Image (cartoon, rainbow, N blue to C red; front, side):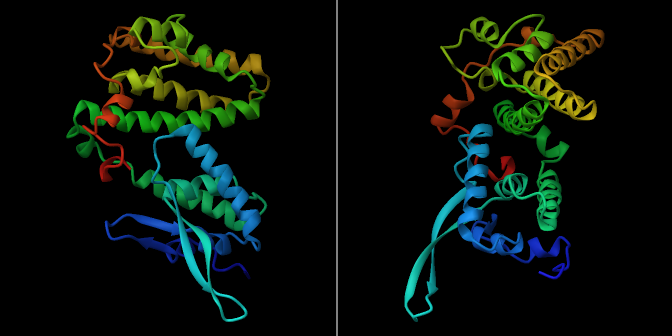
Length: 277
């Protein structure tokens, strides 16, 4: 690709806009830019990114859309091949799962991360949201944050992720595990506790998540026990800070009447709105 003018324009040049004003990238075009010569190899990266997306935000089904693309074969016949419409976040996940030895992969990681950050809503826009809209927005951020945290924890040597996440909850919630929190909130078995938090409680957890990830990376923490200790200590320090500031303790926040999953099913609010993408 003879350096291919390694700058942001290579990704802007292949960006598409649909009839609703939503941007997307086509996988076959991204494949060439990221220097994957064979579709089967690039498809493996896409599959990994899809798994990552499903683990972080399983209800976001608009991130990747399969489409048929007509081409002319060498024998002059028309033939359809599979292609994908990819959202910006999906492109970011593809870059994260790509071959880090490729210069264009590193460039893509930076480009899509920065562009995703730019898309975050402004403070004025956030203040105009309803409480349930704020809950959806903060829940999306915690899902992205937990995906990154899990990756950092895995790099540190964590294998028991339930124990790892409970360490953080124990620090923030004065010894409560995820199950303890669920019981206190009166949730059903295996119902997601984060889907049953108000926006302020979600913000406290988002701070715990982001600060733990940064500390694991910054201190190059190794070993499952050490990683669990870091998560607990970060949660505890955030709890102490809230207490010193006279704020509401996490366990004292009221549980919303309806979970985000219920709200989504009722179509009273959707995470697909342009504001919350």
